[in-house]
Image (cartoon, rainbow, N blue to C red; front, side, top):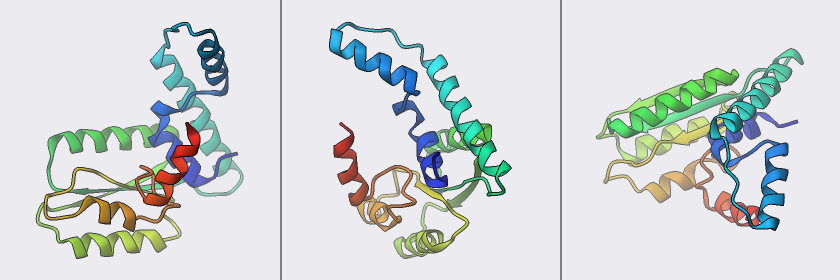
Length: 167
């Protein structure tokens, strides 16, 4: 069973993860070195169904649904679309989501203060900082200020180190 943070990670990284049956099929295909056409919509539907059932099971057991917080600075149109799609995906499986949309001229210290508050908030299970950030804010500093346990994108240096073991 996935914990809240695992669920948040899986929905955000969903396109990179496959169901157990799909993973086994892909592994066998790789051994045979043949190309296989993957039905992306079918795989996505399987992932959504698995995650939806996992969230429903958590709630049925008396636990709260996971809570994802998205932090967006500025008004980049592509970022707006991305955030809307993540909220839609989270809602589809029952993950609570909150958006903190900050103005373009938000200072680095204001953003870091917000992230620190979210890091220590026990009701927040995952944090996603929407990139790109305005030019006056260092993305690396911001990404490393998100707690590794709540870092949905996996951009904290600790999580980047963990990713190498997945390949």
